[in-house]
Amino acid sequence: MNIDISLKNLSDALPADLTPDQRAKAQTLFLKKLSIDAHAFFGGKMQTVPKCGLWGFNWFNVWYTPGVSKVSTTIRDDNEASFALSNRGNLVAVVSDSTRVLGDGDCTPPGGLGVMEGKAFLMKYLGGVDATALCIDSRGADGKHDPQKIIDFVKMVQPSFGAVNLEDISQPNCFKVLDELREACDIPVWHDDAQGTATVTLAGLVNALKLTGKKIGDVRIVLLGAGASNTTIARLILADGGDPDKMTLFDSKGSLHRGRADIEKDPRNYRKWELCQKTNPGRYADEAAALAGADVLIALSTPGPDTVKPEWVASMAPKSIVFACANPVPEIWPHAAKAAGAYIVATGRGDFPNQVNNSICFPGLLKGALLVRAKKITDGMAIRCAHSIADFAEKRGINPDDIIAKMDETDVFAIEAADVADQAIKEGVARTPMTWDQVHDRAMADILEARKTTDDLMKLGHIKSPPESMIREAMDWAVAEARK
Image (cartoon, rainbow, N blue to C red; front, side, top):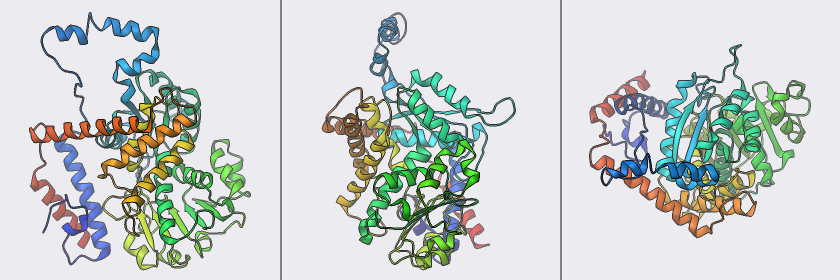
């Protein structure tokens, strides 16, 4: 068996006699098994490493007392100096109460650390941005999760960071947390599950529509799931030209429409109620009815692979587009969606074609916001980022199995950083104006430096290679389980 998992197509490392369903299952099991073993081997993914040097004893006195006193008083007199005299200008807090971790739900505050460290790893390696995982307990005295505790925490910690990335906060709390903090804080507060997923989904949709010859204002779109991701996706699609009369969202109780009194009467669901009033004038009774003749399905719902039925896909319009982006398992396997007639299929996973995942967005977007010291990240900046990603992929070539940029395409992160920074300047939310080229070149230099640091640590043996036996054992176990 070939166990070279450096191959982009992980499926090539699997035995040839596996069925498509067994192959998809084996990939998932292998990645989960290898992940738990590798995390144990390395003790997590992140560490703290100095960015300055020591060239003799007196450098201790420069970096600490008495020399550092001048830094403290300078920042005291001008808090903006903290962005230049400390790492604040390139540091992101990844904040979560771990109440909705990927597809696994409430994992307890420490349970989110794997994902939050993962965000920090991607920010550093892909965007040249430093980040710290901060998983907090948001429960009140009654044991219920209180969004105000997250809001208060972020307000208190913001002087130490250049931006805040909110992550894996359950709805409806996530809406209140983001909307209040965007206005209350003077640094960018970004909810990656919502805004990041929406940005990259819009990017993928833009290019998918180009390949099908359809326009965003003409297509009928069904969104399965009405959580933070899909409600924000819907909002950005509408802001970018989508037709609300041709859009339908579904939550666990049915389609969203003006008659959903259960949503209207709960003030916490104000984001969902906004969409109830704008979309689905026909009030579709169920998913099957809504998808008949629809052009696009965007699913961020219950992990599958049986959440989306093949017959639903078969009933869609010619050259249909299916985004099945639940993690860790998509709502329908890509091969099943293709067999049912879908022209373009995307998932949130990198081991299938067309990974529509916020990892291609947030490292570059946050880098651009940090470099111009933006006060916030607007919807306009997110839409600009989506088109930046889409344009990058189109220029190097797209096809039905390759609609969007990938994480190993270094240039895309510097380009989107520059585009986002440019948009922040245009919208008047940037503290430090820079030219497009200045942002691009600085972002690229920081990205390459971050990658070289990691590469050097690997070459010098400070980051050890995982044993081949670990990879082989994970693969053998996954294949055996898939065959059962």
